[in-house]
Image (cartoon, rainbow, N blue to C red; front, side, top):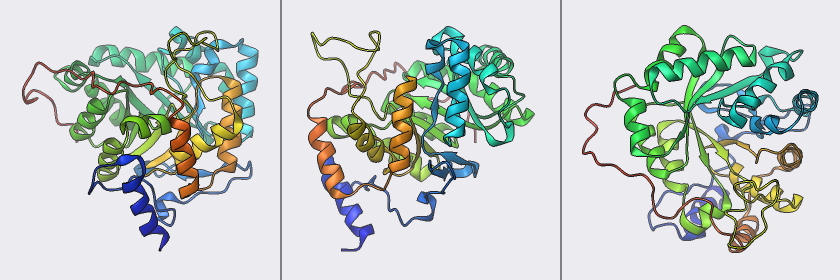
Length: 344
């Protein structure tokens, strides 16, 4: 069987996807899926319509909030030297500590070789502007390559961000001003992700693409499909999550809110899964510096998944609980969103 047809069949069969559903497993022969070699050994891919080549593993800025500044400086330099050019942060990470640490850590690195990504949780235009300007100052830069609405989850989030005086007004204006180059969003519910994709032609989507969420309750296929149709590149978050803590289970990593894979072999397979889906371009690991190093190892070893790889992951997923709820938290007390702005 031709590999393309095989993957289409696999995409329908694996995970119990509905009959007739377009597969999410990518055709590795597709030019948009091409891996770009890098001297570091960590490949890059083109991030959709941005046209920018980004490392297939992105740096999790939240990790900087947990270490002294000297260690943060060394970690960012080491990540860059190992091929990471995509760095992600947000003002909410560590109550601002991650952003504050990032600025000094970037000093001495070639700005034109970095792809800096930031986000805002504010849903109003004024608040989003305040966070954007603060983030630029903290990072010591005059622009971000990517700026995003952060953790879009509920109908209220969408209604406020896209309504009159909403955060999208700031994002669009900031792009016109040259303070951000491309726009995206992150989401923790399927419904919010789909609604955001319908309301604006975003360049990127940050979304939990994870083997447990995929196999236990098909958390990603609809979002992947609409993102692909909209031409938006997908950034996988939580790719090495091991799901929610089970009742009575001892929490590790200072009671982190979800469990992470620790074994290098399992991390390799989980990263391979996320990066094999279309239109996933890159993946951001759980925000600890040692896990980031293991994710870099996985990125260097990445090859598009085979049937055997996917079958093994499906069995592994059965050991864990999903992190995100099976029932949607996206609630709305409204009818059609006639007061939403069309940001196209």
